[in-house]
Length: 334
Length: 233
Image (cartoon, rainbow over all chains, first blue to last red; front, side, top):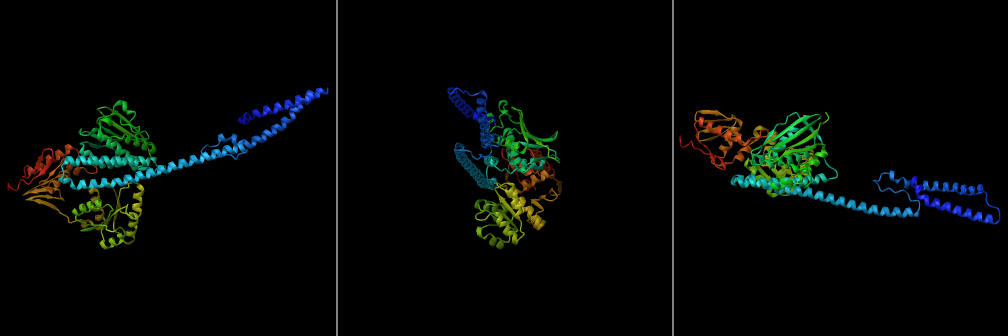
């Protein structure tokens, strides 16, 4: 309403200036014939058009009210009120044209993105076959090959596999409809299964897991997604305590209304200046330069996944002492 | 002797699996024509089917349904896809189990063994060997004991696992890594020290029954089990 009035100020001033003009002309004419208009008549000449003018303004306002109230409407949709005049019709047409161009462009991008996601996922699955073949061939020929060779090959295959998984989950996370399926899971079982998958890696690197998680602890999470997080954390822990004959401790405890899982290694640790940034995408920090390969995406994705699942992940570390990564699960409602 | 019908479109994987499973005395037939899976299935009449999901023309789920319509033969899916949806689909279409790539020979073998045992009974598995003997030295597989001449000594689980591996690979160098891997089971994660302790104990027990230094340390490589007692008899 206020805005409408503001818009009409020009009209209103013009309207009254014209009335004044007419009154002045009428007054001059009247004075010419020696019968000046009384102040009542002058006032009446002002009042009468004002009444009609107000009615006209109200009529205008009602017609254009939709436009003035647009702001309160949700801006999600490109809804535009029915134009009341040609000016607005032009504006609306222009708006519609632009909107549809943008809309099309966005749809195109979404399609392209979907195509890329589909491609990556298919590609990753296809790449798993050669890795499988290498694995099986190595297992078959292992007896005839020097151990240093097989170890080195296994290590590379593990890195390949890790890289493929990283790509797969990164693209899965991009999907518009994600397949999170949260259920109650025995934490110990989940962790044990993940440790098992790193069996060869643990042994080869002379690092040993200590599973200290109580059997009764239950957490609410998506086992597939969280397993990916566990994989990242375990492989980091192994990588940074490699060859030191150290242990990696898997602990969990109840705290208030949640369960906290801790993975503690006594390895290299993270430099103080890097700690706050370990969860940033592509962040590799000093350790990324010291230890070969590190996309800097593992922890970032882990954090993203944890956030989606409603877990909180945080890290404590001291250089040359070790690193503890904790994941806090909110208690499932029993 | 159990027959396995293997439907896998990657010839390398198929051949590797075939070679490996044949060691365990399974008779493995690899699919030849993907349009004739049903005919080949009927012809082979296998005890178990290993079925890949991504196949030319129709996928594994389709063939699984087809096979299910004429037979209750156990079907195990092989797939690179690890999404829960696929596993659910596999089970809903009549699969018995699901193995994801990249797979481990041992995992596949264990799954096949347990399914065959469950469906065809305990003694359906390859003939049961009860003991291994090398020149009067006997390792009893069911009682976990070893005997030499007249002395018998009991072994712990870990000692038994190690000794069995040694005996089966006489004169071959077994690396510490390999030994750790066979000791490491679902719940017990064995470290270097445990392995060393177990080897020492086995040597001691062997000495107690009269066999000296048959487990030799090969520097930088591992251990070797050598028959040293035959000559002393």
